[in-house]
Length: 126
Image 1 (cartoon, rainbow, N blue to C red):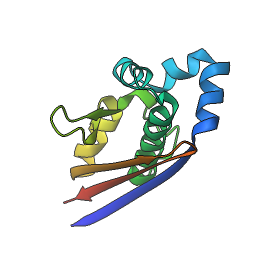
Image 2: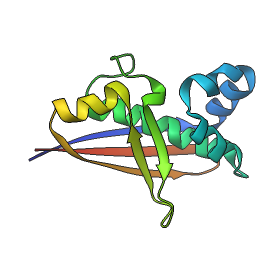
Image 3: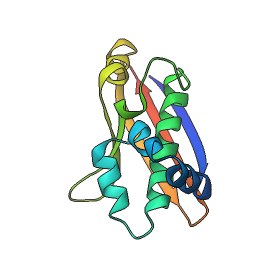
């Protein structure tokens, strides 16, 4: 067994600036489900920044980096309906890489404040 870890830190103010100055940023990076969830929150930019950090942390953990063939919206952060715990819902190339690299488990942890959001992704390989 092997574990691959990816960690990313995002500045909430930077995500807010990008979202306000470039509305297409939200549509290019976040799924409809993510946008709906975050924009319905009082501190929506903290939630968006955490999801942005989660996507970048996944890129780091999987080893492709941004632009490695996985689209932003192929990595979606959702919350468990009972516990609220965040998890990654993967599609397309991201989902294919799980099988091809024998990844058996994906774990996500998020935290955010008014200024910063952090995400950690852990991939367990068989």
